Image 1 (cartoon, rainbow, N blue to C red):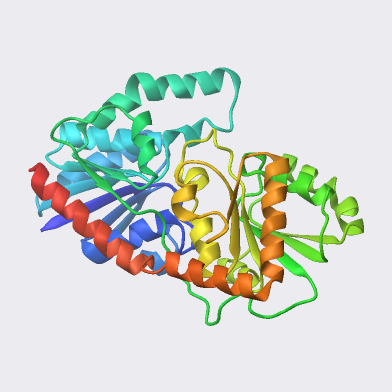
Image 2: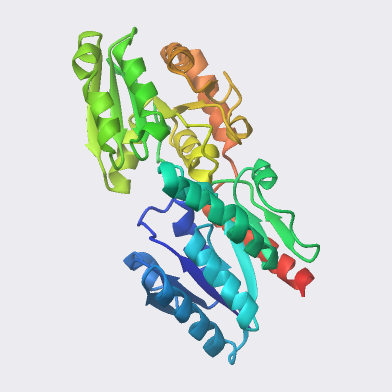
Length: 377
């Protein structure tokens, strides 16, 4: 019997997030023991055997080693860790000190841990990754490449014995009862769902709002807010209002409410800083979510974006600049105002997300991981 220990950080009660789906997929496939720094959502807590709440450093490593040794007497143990440095070290220690195998799950890149810091801390974090952590990965038995495959160019060369499992990117959990954007309204509804940060293009969105030219429209912003990003949005609110663009900040919002807002929308924004190498920014879950809810996605170019969007057919792609993003949004608005074009876009988007339900993707991923582990023995 194969027993899995998942070492992970905070998991939100948001079914379309990768962390949530990893817990769900592993719990449905194997006896699952979770070591985490935050309590699991209730809906997931009942699906796992045990949850061990730990601190960020030594208590995590001690708990993982103790748990792996105990479970090793009951069956074959697989330690499944995420991209973050502390879980990664825990996986390395278990693999080196306990009879078990290690699956390293790269649905984000460790650059996420230094993308928002500067100075000595940034140099220290990058140095630790290049000099130590990246070398630890060579001991892993399986790498799950949940990002766009281009991330392999930023990783060390794996051992010959290591097996790679390539996922097909993000999926969707909640499908709308009816196609969004099908009802004609007096205004165009533009949505942004995700952390409101400068790294997520809040300054580009603000620049577009300041110079907006078009029909009556509203911009709905949903997600955790960063102070600098909020300041950039609020600085243009009055000018945008004079130009016919109403701005609504919802802040952090329950996922069900986010879906309700998206289903009433026309366009979904996904501006991404191309300098950040990670799944959230560079191969966006939101593009899939927008398309599944019937919104026309407008995203800035980066790793994997063009694998999800064909410009003018299943959405619109722009360079990471205010001018380019503004032109792409204008194209999307024009398309949404043309009934024939809007219908064609909707049909193309629905076709492009067929087979991307999380249940199908999770089943395929677990089968691929199990095959890789068998080959690695």
